[in-house]
Amino acid sequence: MSSIGSSADREPKRVVVTRSEANDGPLSSELRNLGLPVLLWPAVAVELAEPGPLEEALAHVDSFQWIVFASRHAVAAVTALMAPPPKGVKIAAVGQATAQVLRQRGWPVDLLPSESNAAALVDAFAAEGGLGARPRILFPASSRALPTIAAGLTQLGAEVIQVEAYRTESSNVLDVEDCRSWIARGSIGAVTFASPSAVDELEHALGKDDFDRLLSAAPAVAIGPTTAKALTERGHTPALAESATLQGLAHATHRLLRAREALAHGEH
Image (tube, rainbow, N blue to C red):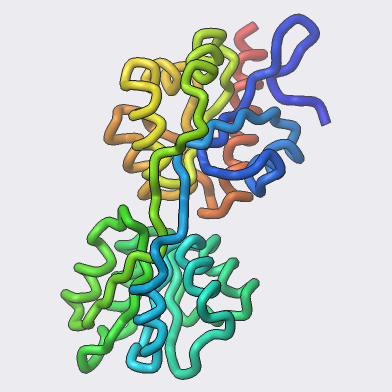
């Protein structure tokens, strides 16, 4: 399949992948399968947290009525310590991508909001009629977890035990000078973001001027509303994936670049 934006006399535009993944990672592979050349700019690094607190919580998993997963990284952290799902504990997930990973590992998904964000999860619990007589909810979270889930479920009457399951850090492998070289050449077609942390860290690494220069020339594509909000707060309105999955992110990027190419051809 030919690359979008390619021609005999100019370099094809690249799609930047800001999530941490290998060259044959899931998002990069989806993009290449759609004919889009990829640049890996890993802005964040995700590592499992020190396991002691999570191990302690899971040792008493039968004291919980729910476990809430807000990302596939939380799923990986928990299932590394507890492969089979606990009996008698219901499972809630934020987003189709998180639910998909749970199901792939043999875990049920009892509650999945229609929208892929933390506020929608809280609303879904409320729509179920609240949480009854102060249930205990285990929330294995990121080191950068926003308070939306824990505060929202507490307000509904739950006792939320939030445990750091993984850490989201600045990447130490991002080649900033190479990034700036690509920006200066104007060879970026789009920039994909799969988390708010990737937005934060790419802006921090590049500096505000180069970050704004990049996204003024190449549109951002966000996996979900929370990530989109991080971009709009910085003055950049992204395209939004129809489904909050890496496949959805890839297809939204492909549609966006096809539309821009068609518009450019129409103008000439």
